[in-house]
Image: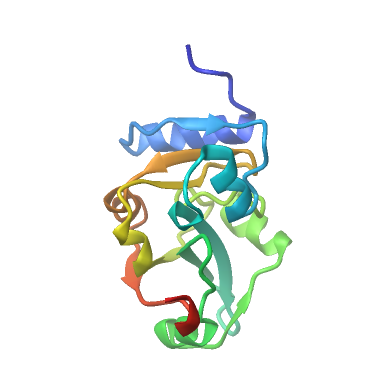
Length: 164
């Protein structure tokens, strides 16, 4: 029998179902706010954790979602080139307002508004991935193909050279 989910995790579970995805959200007692915490909580390699990082266009204020492998750092200069304007990290208020999720719980889909997604190409080498599911304690398992289908994300080389 499935466990009862918090309201945010349940809302995300409903988003998955409404969009035709059968993935199951799991809420854990341990925090999954950071990639390291998430990997420990689910028992996988940190590289299999999909970090959802929100940036914004400095001029347009457009939210941008980078879905990166756990240990990788985003090459912000590369992201700026990809979107055609300077970018900056989004603060917690911007993230919540534009995505509907808190930092540490930003899911790859189901945002309040349309968000351009960029997928770290290194995620494609793993059979199984884990991503946030609406709260800093909720995750769901998926494949790289699922991630692409769910987000319509653009697969790119987006990590700093030292992380590749």
